[in-house]
Length: 287
Image 1 (cartoon, rainbow, N blue to C red):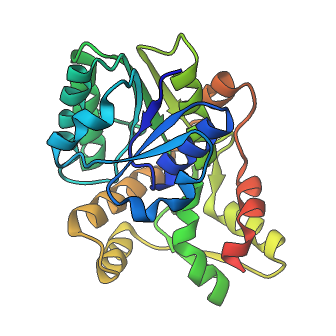
Image 2 (image 1 turned 60 degrees about the horizontal axis):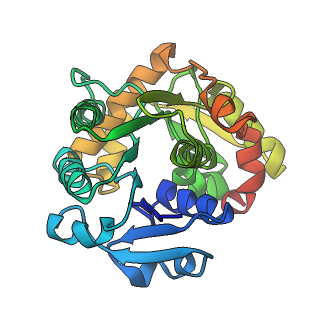
């Protein structure tokens, strides 16, 4: 069996895809910029590290040599359209037959949110490349709550600009499980899957779930998108990303982010993790 290339292999989603592929006995070529940071992945059976960088297209040919299927995910970056374009060109030259791409819910070339627009542009380019494609469009990660772990742990409170709306957050483990199916089973070429959790949850409900699991009160405090943006800027976040996230949560707060997709259960044969599952399995982070 030829190896499957996974980009962003030390990132939140990429690492989970590597782990789940390895657990299935699938040979994996894990693309990393710094192998020194990927020791745990290298210890997994069937996983080979390959050093490359999408920002250095000349490094991609060796990484893609002999690869027929690839999973493409990158961190949010103003250069991501160019980075993905370089990958598509290198993959085409290497004879890659199928790319499963981590996109985003609401990806559209006309999106008012930069990340949505960039994902839309990359989707369109991949579709025109001649390589078979699958777009995974995940919703807000449940792992977003790790950003609030310190305040939940130390103060029993977290702040977000979601008002009282609900959002169908998804566990990264389910994004990876969907990706593994699309990479290893036929019939997913040319498909676009919205990847959500099994239920829409308000942050007040999330606070109640955390309270019950931790055995102490946890409070959700709603703030405005502008307040959230200023806080993110104060924490050192780049201005473009703070603005994008504030705008995204402003959209979520209108109540239009509660859509629940059947894709995870359709692809994997079982429901995705609930928010209570996520809290139970990550409780140590919030204690």
